[in-house]
Image (cartoon, rainbow, N blue to C red):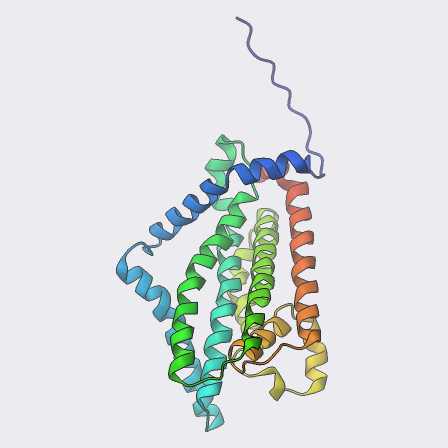
Length: 275
């Protein structure tokens, strides 16, 4: 019996047939969910103490930062704590997507070399894991919101589209950084400093209303600045977000997602050689 003929073609950057690619990706949605759950179990989040730490970790961080603000500023209040907690929880949705996405391709080397599947599943799984970690913090904030007596209004429904924008931005960042890390491995070592810088440059430890207009203009280059400001306005102050904030966040999220996806898909066939 003749052996099958195998033809190795040189790599050429370009998008794959998108209809077939998306169909293949959709057919593996169950695998993405199970793969994400298995990664969470590996990180001990399947146990009671693991899930408890999932809630306690950002809550303790917000308490530490609140204490720092109180020591430096000399005063604070419940609204400040609500802002800090809500903003920190949403920030960690994006930060966890980046942290999981940066090594999504390089850590899946064996899977990539031995199995044919849409590689973009790996950074998507990293974002799903970040989403699983975010959901318990939402429940915690609902309790905090009630305890400290923050206001309620119908404007809080704006939290839904803002969350969708944040999730799209987190996914785009995970896709983009996972591809960059294939070519520049040092980016994973720099990521903790990048995320910490992003935390300090974003309205988490402070509110956007408390900074000068000149600094606000410079913050247009920060993709999550107005996203976190809009989130705080809605879930903490029960106000409608500014039109500028929503437009800025949506443009950044769409730009990062489409640029990251194009860069990833056009280079995907080169990953096996680079790993």
